[in-house]
Length: 309
Image (cartoon, helix red, strand yellow):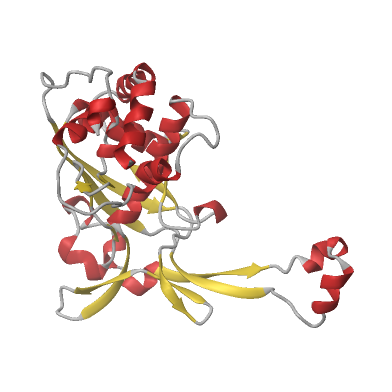
């Protein structure tokens, strides 16, 4: 697979590996929805059954680490196609899957292509940072993301020390969860004059409008999680810095993260406190990452296409 790639791979051998721990501290500014199926018209929120400090069972809302990783991966993918100046409709579906969701297994067997993995680490760290699947390989990345938990009494036994004494730590888990309502509108009510007479006849006494509701984590809830970077290259650390900066950008003097689903509808907005200094200067990391992409554009696009076959 890698034999067709003739561009020299950037030399990373002399660069020290980077290990970093990035605690995340969040406050929900809007309701957060992270779905876990439906009951009737109600979309349920994901919950984790825990044994609380008093020995009782409790179902506590949380945001999965996989959801956190998805936001970071999508931000890196959007950034990559922008910097690489990929034209619309310019990527194969499998390459899009690789960038936005980590790809998929498309072949049987268990032959590992170490050279291809090395080239991916060097040329496309925005992919290998989070791991990926391609052909018959599943390649893990150096980034780990904890679940994001709510600060409440049922989680007191595992709260970080800096959150153990905040007032939210005394709240019952049920106080952190609520419901939000919405309406799916029937377009016939506002745009009926555009519907053909033939279809209008079939729509008599019919409507697709409905009210729905969803469980959410309430605004004001405090949450925590952690990102870990284990024995990563400088290119991976730079990619993580860009991922956080793209996915969770500054809004004035604070970072805003969007967690869970339905973020396009106003859900999931949080204030984020995170110290990125273990990754180095963010502006310098962004410059190095973007210089890598621009300087090896053709080789990177060739590599991505070759990786998925």
